[in-house]
Length: 273
Image (cartoon, rainbow, N blue to C red; front, top):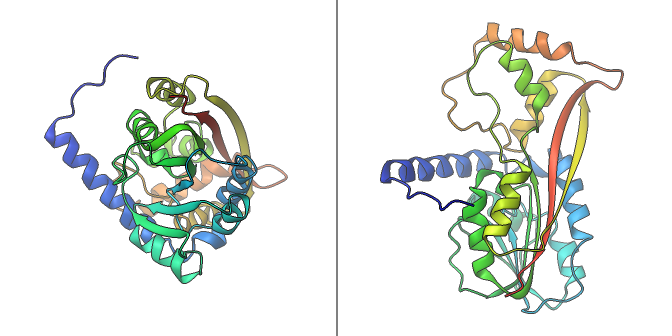
């Protein structure tokens, strides 16, 4: 993979600004997240089933934990491990505490996944579900590799390009403004894993489709989980444009309802050195 070019200070400032926006956006969804994140929770439960029986170092991260909905299951699977619930949003961590999911062995850490305030080789496991799509794959994989001890595991689930394609297609027929985020592809994550030293990473791609009664229900669900944040979007969408998009989306209706597709990557990797 070619060397990453240096990032200009202007671009770096843009990235920091966008991450602050992402943090604030997800923070506003903290109270409603658990009720509406059905797919994220289903994917996370599947990821929990892949947890190893033991770790080389008894420290683990739930990276981009949101409200830490998997805390109890993670602790039951690895009862001797000290967990840290890491999220960019302080409001999400506060909601996790409010729901009684944080304690002496499952502690909060408000931090950027691309710049973790943790020592190298300090973690036996990094677990992450539907959180790192906002990150640069190479940057975050390098950081995960840095904090993992030799023999440590990475369990990652993340939406890929092609997710929300019905929404994207419907909007593209109306105007060319950004309405859906451009997500990294499987090849981006594969290249990043190899570059970060995860030579034997297992990557599996799974297409999952949800069905809704209306476009309004889709929009409500995305907003309630913070997934409606779109990088580069500006201003409010006009009523006429919204109605035109709804008309386009309705042409995709099936007997089950309006489809919303998620293209999900499951990545399982071990740090070998």
